[in-house]
Image (tube, rainbow, N blue to C red):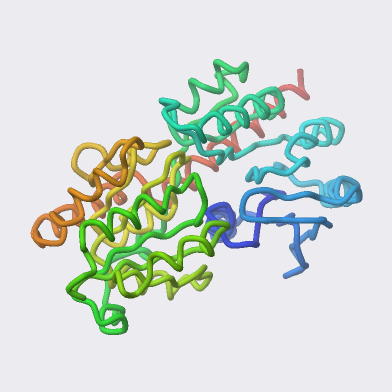
Length: 375
């Protein structure tokens, strides 16, 4: 099957990882991929789309981007168009383009949310759902991560039979426990990791404040690695530094380096106010880390039942001030949580399982199109 994939390659974020892992996996299964993205032409299968601006969160295409996309789809005639939605105006134009070309259209809708709407930022996220819903109703299928998202989209007018729940997955062979020298590199007995954007919705300052106030880094035994970049990094870094046992590593795009860090770490922490389903969390789980995350988005569901420590999005810093010292002083608890996290990934969140479900959607859509043409 020939799939035209509209996704991201830069700047590094969860959407980039998702697009890369899924398209590479589909290629291994024998599918042809035309990768359409805002950026440079990396290979003969790439279709670069012109843009004015792009960030980890959103992209502004040029006025030519729509024409470039249309011409490419006409020439390549894929069997399916699959858009890993990236907050771009093209997301809203795709249904019209694909309808004119008679091409099936699928979306993966990553937009984060707090289903209980407990946070100021969740109002903005709800607005994005309200903005997208009328257009998602015109996609043949929309892939989301959990039932709570499905219920919200249905409430906003997206037909239930056009929504498919397929949780994210990770390559359990690639993201697995293994040997690492990272502890020696950072001269630590215990390593704690945050990996993601340094932005308001990720709530990193609550983690930093809890780490500092609980004295986790005072004796030098424990270090907190902050992996990622974002708008708040420059304002936070001067107040939380190596004197507190906090090490800022910036964005790391090299997979092996990130895997080495995860394999050498003990605990993965995700203090987000809103989420979808964090690939970074699943990567940490796959590597056997004890995981602590808020119940934003689907992350609480992933860790439920003992696969990790789930905390409320309200009062994150206060909760972490209690949990972090307990994790520090109880290695057997860390080990138990790490094994449970790894087991949960193997049971439910593997990349192969994700790919199989996506292929099933492709084949279902293809059969539907054939039947409709015959009819």
